[in-house]
Amino acid sequence: MYKTTFPKQFPDDFLWGGATAANQVEGAWNVDGKGLTTAEVVRKTTDRKHMSMDDVDKESIQAALADKSAADYPKRRGVDFYHHYKEDIKLFAEMGFKVYRFSIAWSRIFPNGDDAQPNEAGLAFYEKVIDELAKYDIKPLVTLSHYEMPIALTLRQNGWLSRDTIKAFNHFTETVFKRFKGKVPYWLTFNEINTGTWGFHATGVLDSHETRAKQLQMRYQALHHQFVASAIATKQLREIDPKAKMGCMLARMQTYPGTPNPVDVRAAQLEDDKNLFFTDVQARGEYPEYMNRYFAENKIEIKMAADDEAILAKYPVDFISFSYYMTTVTKADEGEQVNGNMATGGRNPYLQESDWGWQIDPIGLRVTLDEMWDRYRKPLFVVENGLGAVDQLTSDGKVHDDYRIDYLRQHIQQMKEATEDGVQLMGYTMWGPIDLISFSTSEMSKRYGFIYVDQDDQGKGSLDRIKKDSFYWYKKVIASNGEDL
Ligand code: BGP
Image 1 (spheres, rainbow, N blue to C red):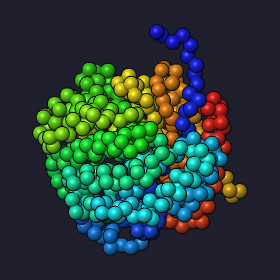
Image 2: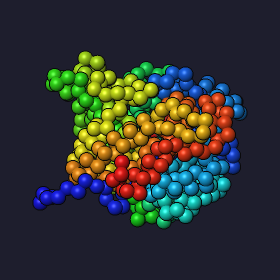
Image 3: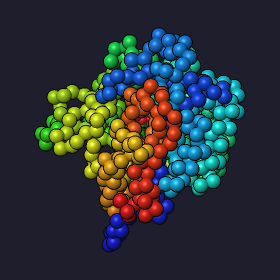
Image 4: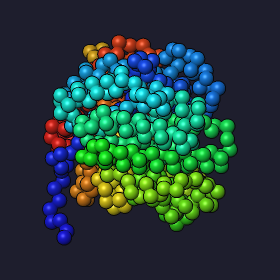
């Protein structure tokens, strides 16, 4: 039956909130037994349009390990959420958050990734965070791996390239599922899992000195291990905490054809398939045929253990989450964008871009939501979206960030349209409700937050938290369940 009424509104239980990652907010990188992660050996970049982390090699890691300061490694200091979590959660509650997405740093729990016993101080920290959220009735949505591989595993076994990493990861997941049983209703395994094809930051695989063909072989193999580890984590969660839901997480970047020429349409379809490949595996439980063909044509051979396919098929995710910042454009004669990377995609003359070259496309969010709902028929969750911008703190202690409000408003409007189109959307956690260290550039000055943090790119500042104009706006949006935009 067709619906005859189309209420343009979000469901009553829509999960409004914000999202962060341990390595971008926590700081306290050498406190309470924490081990270092891949994120914390990456330096600042001076190139705003490119990521800084994929030329990392063993030598640069050794140099980073020898450097005991946070001066050149901003992800070591974050915005000191580790010591400010009560104050920060109180501010989230004041905005009316229903959900808070954060990651558990694997190396706080297992400093070397595969220690025999967990580090109690690490578990205790996240327990305090979860209990603090519960005071305000904010539900945790926890990412198990947000570019935070224990550096020991990268050095010892080249990160996810090793099958042994599956075992280590699933020991970690079992430990946290047991500890936080009944307290965390939503989990995600790997943040932006598809960015594993971009390199080190996501897989912990050191391959910057390899040929492009070899890199692809290594990266897809590492990703296969992540798929298996994700399915095993889903199995564990069903057994340990059956009411909790498991999701996958994709950096969704829709590719438009550069012209209506069918060769360009086909090129765009291939790019898009290579993006959706990840959700195809994790939501449908099998490798899609188009990808098997792609692997064969590119001489990529995925080594699988006997029961890998059965595990993938048996434990698909319950819901699909993704980040959405931009869309991109391709033409057949531009060749493959396998090394596609944020901000390096083709230009779209109809779109404006952020100061970092990210093409802003609110309607693209509706297009994506509608297409993904049709493809999977599983609940969707937008777990990242937002505008990185340079904010000015005025002399009277205010930040007038109308550009951010405008960006978010337009995206929320399109989510509403998608809801009316019939998409089952669980919630929206905008990226970086509190200013944090940029993932791609390690800058502080690329700010996303509703809450300004007084800290500059050199790490100087009081760390005071200041409400921006957008803080009051988002509070209104949540209170009206998305009606008052
Ligand atoms: C996503 C990552 C986040 C985040 C965001 C914004 O890709 O999952 O960790 O930081 O992008 O990116 P950036 O910080 O580079 O602006």
